[in-house]
Image 1 (spheres, rainbow, N blue to C red):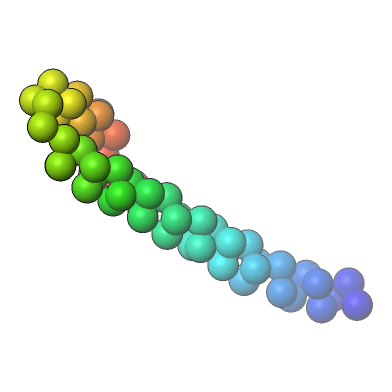
Image 2: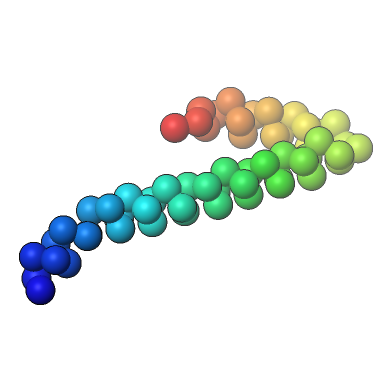
Length: 57
């Protein structure tokens, strides 16, 4: 049974990694929508600084 577990372990890890990455991207998109609708200019400036300092992976 150990060989069966070792067979399914890499695809399972990949699935978990891809699934968690989607959640993170969706969260940033929701945050982006909130920032876009915010009327304050300083919030937009801070958002642009944040986006420029962390390029997408």
